[in-house]
Image 1 (spheres, rainbow, N blue to C red):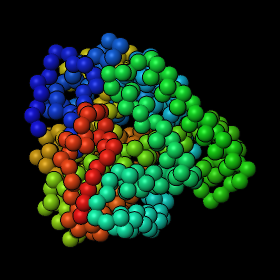
Image 2 (image 1 turned 90 degrees about the vertical axis):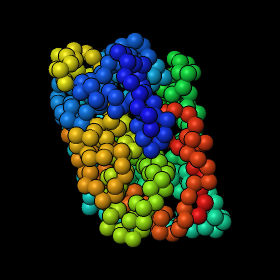
Image 3 (image 1 turned 180 degrees about the vertical axis):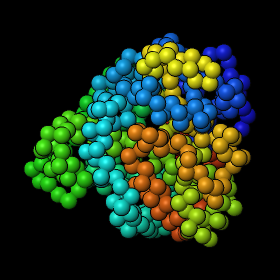
Length: 406
């Protein structure tokens, strides 16, 4: 993929043209050794961080805030300004962040994720059984990636997948508008309306769990933390909102972009199929290369020098983990897929206090999904070139359709 030359100042955000790779401008920005200056839609300056060492340092530095209510916190589009009214776990600082994370972290341990592995395997097999019944062609998004990722996310909440399906269908067009030339305050009002509706859904969901508790994560958090006053109903609703969004979309993206990346590297598919022990490392390697949640915003709370560049208090900073994860200073031949590579130091799950809550669940889900797909669908391949179904630049590797055969 050709590398672009950085200008003195670029319009943010930069967009990827392939779901398997971050924006082509990243390497040239990273080669300068310093943060790259950009401008947001509203003209405010933002600094893009592309080196691995600088990215890791900033994500662990309390002088860079995650507080979305701070006016300097960078928003990528006008349509998303309304999200400032919905602070969530990854858009808040301690002590609020500390209290809320502690309330739910025990539900996302490696042990709990492993307990779900057999159910994940049954779900993967069920979906592939349905694909095989329908012949030898399918849309991988609707037949496998969306229901598999959605079901896992619903298990993490104790909700029904049918409820998630209805919301996903409703919000696709709104998200498409918010990331395109029609980004306006009117679209922003529509986004905010959808967010309010989802928050209200989760408040009703919590009320129902209080009246009819079960053996599920939300019921346990209500019993331990809502009833005792550690967190409020609204705070738990926003936590459910976050798990719902951040759990489904990135895993779905990895199940499409990840499959596409593997299909472009058939020798790596052979390694996975021949040696299942390779799967855990392969998942991290693909997370590193694809970086499904590429951009991690922060705002400087004081003047800080990074890579020889002074970032002033109040200025926005965005860590591009998609660039950091391909830094040749940390990863030899960084653009090459190597499922045997030891790449656990990647930043696709973040780091520090904001390390992804669902990392264990995501890793195990992807292990099950990749292993089952390539074992049960020999000869799996795309029926269209990638540019025909990823036909619009975006800042996330979301694929809305992915026709495959086997």
